[in-house]
Image 1 (cartoon, helix red, strand yellow):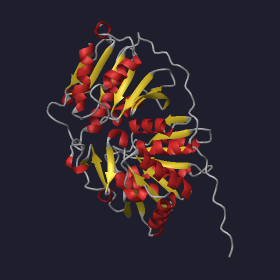
Image 2 (tube, one colour; image 1 turned 60 degrees about the vertical axis):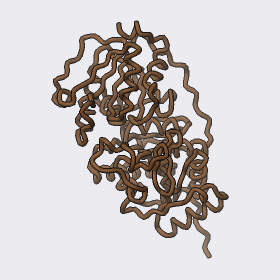
Image 3 (cartoon, rainbow, N blue to C red; image 1 turned 180 degrees about the horizontal axis):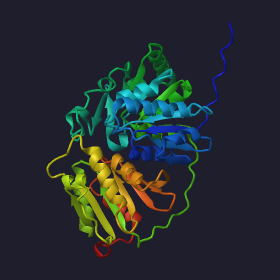
Image 4 (cartoon, one colour; image 1 turned 90 degrees about the vertical axis):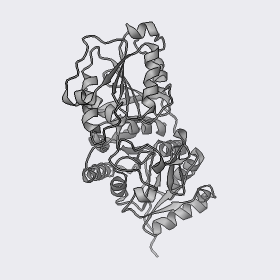
Amino acid sequence: MASLPPRPRVSPYVVALADDLSGAAETARALGGPVRLSLDAAAVAETLGEYDLAVDLDTRHLPPAEAAVAVRTALRAAQSGPPRLLYKKVDSQLRGHLAVEAAAYAEGAEAVVIAPALPAARRTVTGGVVHVNGVPLHRTDGWRAEHTSPPRSLPEALSGLPVRTVPVDVVRSEPAALDEEFRRIAASRAHAVPDAETDADLDAVAAAVLRLGPGFRLLGSGGLAGALGRALARPATPCPPTPVQDSTPLLVVVGTAEPGAVAQIAHLTALGAHHVPLNPADLATGTVRLPSTAPALTVLSIDGSKGPCPGAGRVLSTALGALAAAYPGRPDLVLTGGETARTTLDALAIRELEPLGEIHHGAVHSRTPDGRHVVTRPGSYGAEDSLLTIAVALRPHLTAATAAT
């Protein structure tokens, strides 16, 4: 019998494809090694350096067919050079075009292992069902701003893609048993959806996929990206200390419908921040007036007192991003919500970020090529003091008196 050709040697460096910017930034930090964070999908074809690449494909707002095309195009670019490890970042609450993007990502693979659990945010997968704080996703209000209801399970969310769930006891079994289960599922032309309740479960999943070789691909949240980074065990590249000028204004842009955002903003206003709640109609029609000078600390948010506006998200985030980009004083930025982050940086013509660190889980501190400081954070993340923690990290000497001046 003729021997099989050797598998191509895969670089330890990762190409990670995300559907929004806050997720791309979260993944970049989770991988833990030298990293480039790009807002330009064309960067996928330029991954010859010794670094990971996390790319925001910005597909959340696209029609499903166009989102799938964006994933296919990025995959072809990633596979045109030396073999790389591939990673697909998805939302831990399954928002976005999960089914079509997963199907596009699976093309040409032996199998995809799908694990969106994010234990750090108390989002787990048990019996193929995503749970948030122990409650099944479809019984939460995590999709309040979406057009549709949340799926009842991962197989339902991945409708059209053949999948098989893997119980947590198999995930926690001997490595050889988990490898064999993933191989068995792949041989049936399906994709594995393992349960995961802890970071150790995700570590087991990532290690198994690395053992199985480049025919298997990983798809998951920032939790699985962190497990992949730990499995690769590369030394992180230390960033030099980056002084932040206290005299530079700080603009916090809250582009999320999460109820917790109200309490997060309240912590900043208690500090003396100038809060500007924006009427959605005024924002959409461009009738909001900017001040001529910027206070030291300002919060822009969409007034959600009448509830979320399903279907208007991209229009409002684009208008909010344009307003933030035009704000006087060239402020440093705190951007919550992936779409808000993307539209703001698009309006500023910023195409790349240098991740510097993580202020708290998911709140990634980056620097732009021209030296502006930017923190991105998914809209659904963070405790009540999240925005306060971020503001104080960027402005350690901020006081109520300086915030109001």
